[in-house]
Length: 504
Image (cartoon, rainbow, N blue to C red; front, side, top):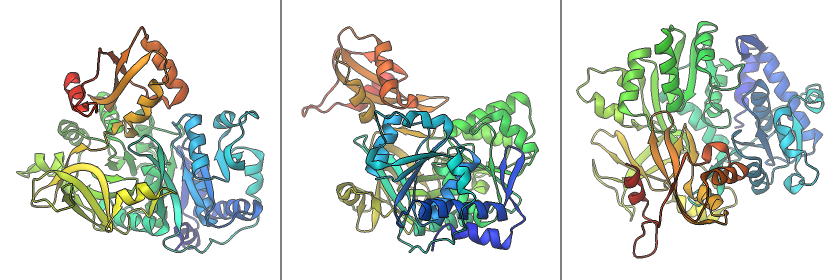
């Protein structure tokens, strides 16, 4: 089944329900939403003579056209490649080449990064802007019916960096997305038709994945006028249209809570805030509950098992009289209904309650594999289980507490930063002899990267300039610590545990 059938059904059954809001302004009902998507799908598939399964990338900030384009790609039987809007153009070009993307849909603000005739897009990829004449003309194309797709056909290529820092395309099928959507409805939240799903977090990631549940219930898709996260804007939207549901990184939750507490604003218009993508410390969720009440749900997932490994429901988070509340709140909850979760040792043998090992997950939501990367797929998918690379322990009731990440990933503001990628950039500086990047706890962002550098006469400003020229701004180190040498074991491997101790 094509996941876009959810929109086709909503447009048939509930044509007059409002579908897309920009700020507090209604743009389209479901009849109009479905019609625009069907015409864009014809433009993409038939107008450009693309075959089923070919890739189309989206690189833009959150805006109503993002949702139209995403659904049109799926409706046409093509594969969506949503790209993090914070990435550097060089990083975007890598993804376009790796995924063999045929078309890039961007906005006029972003398109300038890809119009240099001296550096054409890779592989003959063409680019159009969602606010340009070609896109507007596409909305007058004939209507196209949703393409037939098999459950295991790829629908979404979710690019996530691997342990080497090289981005890998996670192949998510129509079955994966449908299973994820069912899990949302059964485990995370039960949306109503008048609730508003707010895209304050990037549509290219978790917020966009959760949009399918909103479409299934013919609910409101609300794109903030700012295109992103603004606490004051969200407080205003909670007043009108109200009934807000949103996915947010812990950093966003903390900023929103702080603003509400400072302004003494009403929280009545917030219905559900689902948080994940990084550590939420116990005192932070305690404060959030005090300020906003029982509106929070925690999830744990990965791009390889999108949004669907564990859940900590609102009723458990809210029950602070429970004798084990602190333990539960510090965990990431228990397995969602569509998956199984195990903890194993290095040999793959299951461990008992309280024993720390690698987190494994199995279910219909787990990815098909990595795009054109058999070696990485074979390492991650073994005997039907996804080896997450995350370390944790299950208690006797099945609550999972994460202990560490074997991949050394730094999660800053809900975004992944892979140290190897940053290290490789810093080593391009002629004065840098050695470098190692680790995460440091930060009250605002959860974690921030810190670089330990062995160098001769290198000013930190030059390292900053190098990073800004090569990678996204959020990945650059927040601090450079110049040292005489890096701690290493007998095999010459840098001991990052020792570097973390130095930070502490």
